[in-house]
Length: 159
Length: 279
Ligand SMILES: Cc1cc2nc3c(=O)[nH]c(=O)nc-3n(C[C@H](O)[C@H](O)[C@H](O)COP(=O)(O)OP(=O)(O)OC[C@H]3O[C@@H](n4cnc5c(N)ncnc54)[C@H](O)[C@@H]3O)c2cc1C
Ligand code: FES
Ligand code: FES
Image 1 (cartoon, chains in turn green, purple):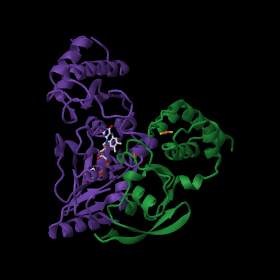
Image 2: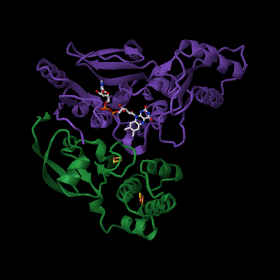
Image 3: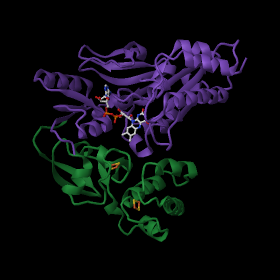
Image 4: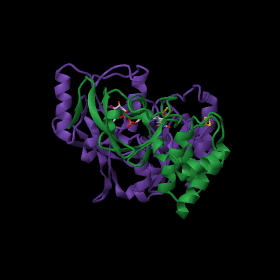
């Protein structure tokens, strides 16, 4: 049985293919731990309520709100953050399609799009719409984001 | 940031979970079972929920089952809403839970967490009410299987220390005609103004509702009205709406008058889509 007392404990997290030791309270969210302990600030802190998707990461390849996961819950599970997609084709597509304004929502959108393209390389409009409803863009650049997502899905299909 | 500390336990078996709960309770601690954890985290962050210890049931194999066993579907309480939809195991349930929250949240929200939610919606329970589902509970005296409705009194009444392990639905319900409809205020991702699940069994329509009253419900009287062959479609719906088990909600999402209007239209849509023949 995995357990953690009231005290802070050192646990291992598997992030972007590397194992890191972090010191957590049971109450620490994954978002807090990634940002404050590992310096991985790509996952953004905003609503902390599961409403905006700015904190999206992949856990076991599935999109998750890191604000709605405890760090302790994710022991032994592969975690992927936006930092692992640096200089990736999907990042370039977002740049080329002008799918970025202030950039605050971008890591969440890119990770969601990355997972979508891997799982549904033949995603139709309805599936794309369903997945992208998880992320809000406060600059409202939805049309450009949609174009980028479609291009990324298309690129994955051809890969 | 959750403003208080708590102990975390992730047992691998049902007896280990039950025993852990009892030991912690004997120490005077407030303990809660934790599944997807989204409700615990969001409410704890704003000090509307608290615990000295949480027991994460996601390590328990039985809580992850999602398969046909003999003549029934077995759905573990810790299965995520997306997994239920993707499995196509019980299409009415899959379609109904697909309307809850957003895609990313549905990777984390579990069916056990949804139907035990402290929120009034609990939309995942609607298909279970229509399909005479049973539940398997873990207790210190051993497991107990009983009809869901036996422990439903507006909300699920599960005894202290007990938890929901699985939901059992007769396979035959998986092939009946069904419909599921959710109406929200503006955006698609939102709590329901009205959410209705329906299926047709033995040429009678069954309906269950969320967002209409302060708790999700299925009502014999409402169904009797909707199945009254001597009435026109409009008469059936008006009669059904006059027989709801509680007052229609009047809140920031929708006034009572507007909700009633939406409810009637949604019922019309459901009856049409199921081709429930007007008299
Ligand atoms: C962004 C967002 C949008 C949402 N939108 C909707 C919506 O549209 N419709 C809707 O119906 N709901 C909606 N919800 C509410 C959500 O379905 C509930 O909060 C649900 O409780 C979350 O499930 P969980 O598994 O994450 O719960 P948890 O936080 O793990 O548990 C919730 C409660 O259930 C208890 N519990 C969990 N599992 C069990 C079990 N096996 N046995 C006994 N008790 C148990 C816990 O002790 C706790 O009290 C939304 C939630 C979020 C975060
Ligand atoms: S910060 Fe996690 S969903 Fe908004
Ligand atoms: S680009 Fe600014 S929030 Fe989306």
